[in-house]
Length: 306
Image 1 (cartoon, rainbow, N blue to C red):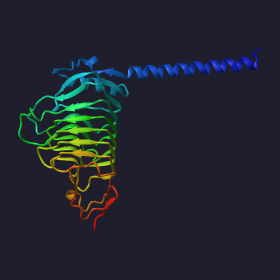
Image 2 (image 1 turned 90 degrees about the vertical axis):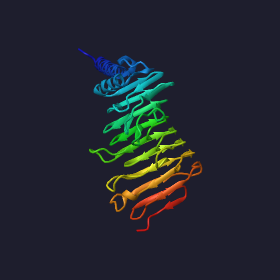
Image 3 (image 1 turned 60 degrees about the vertical axis):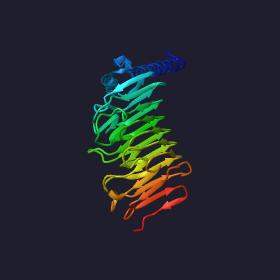
Image 4 (image 1 turned 45 degrees about the vertical axis):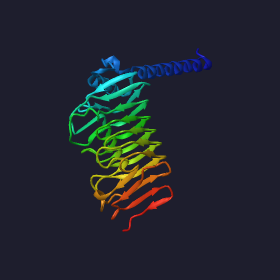
């Protein structure tokens, strides 16, 4: 006859076995969901076109349910017209000394890194993204982006150093399927020597940019550090927070808001900049007639006269 103590011991052993099995399965899954772009043939030699192997690595991880794609030290040449497209549930982790560098082109618009119509994406580590404005072979357009975020949800980007783009360092806006991006966090970006803007904000809900440093934007208007400027009054500028912006030597302004296209919108504006003390190249807020909501910079509020 089996005693009560034997039953208890048996149950405990079964529970421990089950726990160990699922814990090991989870560990194996985590290990399986990490890969290096070099496993897919990326060379990082500063000469080879590494666009396809990087895209293949991202697609493989996304199809497996998500995980980390590692970028080892090296200079990876990117066909920015084709772009590196991030996919759902992928973290792109840049190791120190790794660079995505655009191959010179004549396109009026491009994106070295595209985050479009996806969710749960991270760009981590020490990402450096370099455009090709000095080698650009065309003369038209102003939409060559370092990172393009459009119609995306739950995006986190840290320590991005984005330089020399034909247009903007970072662009945040809509797609045809979703006319805003949502839940975007950009931490400690450094944006320098981009041609049109450091960061353009077109349509977004819940954007937080902390400790951005944006310098030396020049080449084609507006030439500002951060420009918040929707393209239509159906877009969104909701819960935008800029923390400790530092800017200098931008040809336009360090920070600007231009709302002509947002006039008579049903959507309210909510924009907060915590301080202006490190914005050395000016602030511009214009075309705020018939705009609902709140714009606050430091202790100063800009409320529309309706």
